[in-house]
Length: 189
Image (cartoon, rainbow, N blue to C red; front, side, top):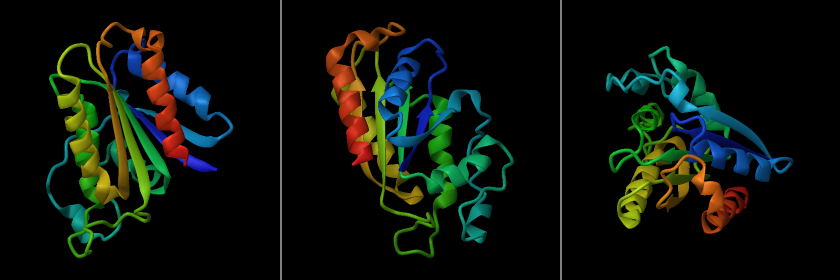
């Protein structure tokens, strides 16, 4: 059974990301081991760019916060799904800090710059935006997902739901729920 890590970057407990998370967890029940992380509730500090992680040759970080404890979960999962709103044309700050901290997987002595245990994992992002250019937000999501390659996530998929600002409104959009279901199937394949 595949292990899927769902990382929710929203601060709105009744928002679209949490509604979508509940929908997706239901879809995955009995089909995958699912671990849900409410990253907005975690203490994930910014990367210090100290390079102490580069001296160890295993994914690790000298900071003692919630991200450090998540490193084994990130390294051992088969796939990861990011759920978040678009904030000011970008990922929410806490999710961006989470992404930046995957620098702890980078190893400059490796040809692929990665010390991840596995390098064939999938990552997907489903972002909700209220207003703004969905194609631009999709490009932003795709660019951010590529940065997870050092943590072993080499295959990526992104989807941005436009006009999804009202909390819970994503559940009234069949085309967006279909896109989420297709993303789940892709993660499981």
